[in-house]
Image (cartoon, rainbow, N blue to C red; front, side):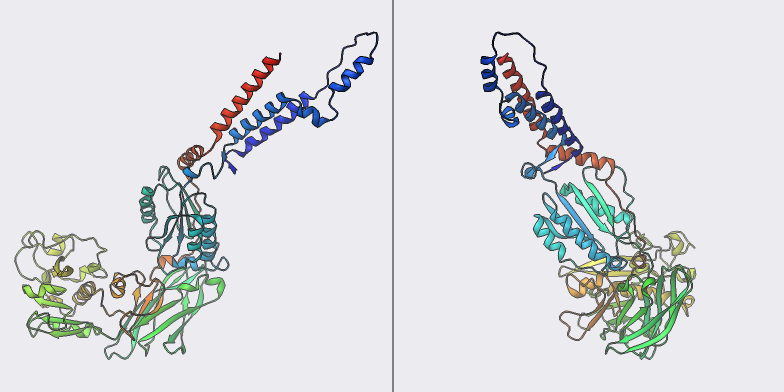
Length: 571
């Protein structure tokens, strides 16, 4: 049994004065009598032989003690599990499983301590418990169940390499739990800062517990690797993030698939922030780039490796274009993709996509396609979609590199399309083939315009388009954790741990998965948050509904009335 107001238990000290007043002796009156022999016999029989005998013979004192005890217990607001089992609170425990939780500034790690805390919260819950993990999204591990089952599930959780969502998205995810009517939510995390409004989920007590003490870290957060023209070497750059305030030098090495390690030139990090490091040619198609430095500068070893692997099976793209078109030279710019000229759009050839000039044949709609629609006619409504800049087709595309002379006119004569629609040159539609959605992308650029000769705009645009169309088969040297293509490759739940993962159903094919989130390299602990005053008031109200204090107070009043009635009867 616990108490909402344990300070009121001090009221039990009132029992001392009541008992003391009852046994307080009064001064006897002196009355002369002829003989005191008979009075001595009467007094001997009336006086109790001990303190306990006198205490037991006082019914009024017992009733007063019971009344005071019941009143004090009512004021202390007791919470009795068996009494309030029908009104027990519902607790949700959320454990952050992002990559930064593997930092070792706490021993053995932030995640290990947070997991122990999750087990403790599950075991101590008085009612039902639900267990969730927070990675790239909020994932249920156990729906509302009893405490032992939830605690057992929490003890078996493992960390991943996912990136924590933005604080705004986390608040939206928490809001989605409001329909479950939780009494309290515990969020166990490390770097998350939640700008929680005062009136946020007023019926739920939300507590954010932070794990972490140090922010020093260095991490590999990205890589841009590609095969050279001969296809024998890998070349490119890696992105290194440093949170160490001082300048220092970190080691870099290449671990091959057979386990041999080759040292690479060290990385000089002059200041905190993101740094781009150019790599020497690497004579391998599968390996691990590893970063190494002292422990006091690198609290999280989970983000010190970058895995890469050549899938060894490039997709085939069909080109239906004139013989002299610049599209036939795409193979030089994109050596990971096989381009095959074709005159038909039949589904028999191994075509993953079709790049066509002019109108798109009807049969080609069975395949993922990208079609160019050059020409002088104005843009028709519905052909161009006003996508936001973060759309996958627009990533890394320098729209300013496209000369206006190479673009179709806009709605007004003489107005380039890039200005008419804010720089959005693409449209997309989806065709259902046997219940499967097939994407089609329309590009409003003339690829053979002389203004695009020797310009990087077109290859970058086509690369993004092909990556978007072939996102389940694109020949990446590495996938980021949570990439949509991984779910398609795995036909379900894809791995969330960085490393080499054999592809199911394709013996010998290895997919490299990495943590590609600079935000997870920042280990600065956030601030813990207690429930708002509105949430605390609502929680106190629910607790009062589960306390037997009204019954205890009523019983105290009944005892006092009974004591008064007996006193009046005797006197």
